[in-house]
Image (tube, rainbow, N blue to C red; front, side, top):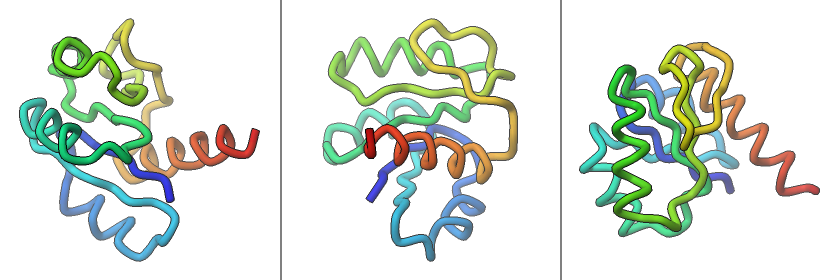
Amino acid sequence: MITILTVGGPERDLAVAFGFNPSVEVVTARDVDDALEKLARNRRVDAVLLLDGASAGASARTILEEDPAAPPLYAPESAGAIPEARPLPDAGAGDLVAALAAHLESEETR
């Protein structure tokens, strides 16, 4: 099971898109404070996907300041250059989660 925490973005759309996928769990956070709370309670998170647009850079810095052992951070290229986050090609939220899950699954098999 791959667990991805999304920060910002369309919660409802992601829940519907991945609700029936047994290999991907999507945990959603409204903002960075909600994300920090969920990271503190759930150590199974494999990656954090920053979907909070212009706030993504600040969210990445806050997450790493509060939790230096946080899982890897990812953001769409449209969020701009965020040194703390790995870029993903721009796409809709569901496609970003699917691409990230596939990437993480391929890393697990190595």
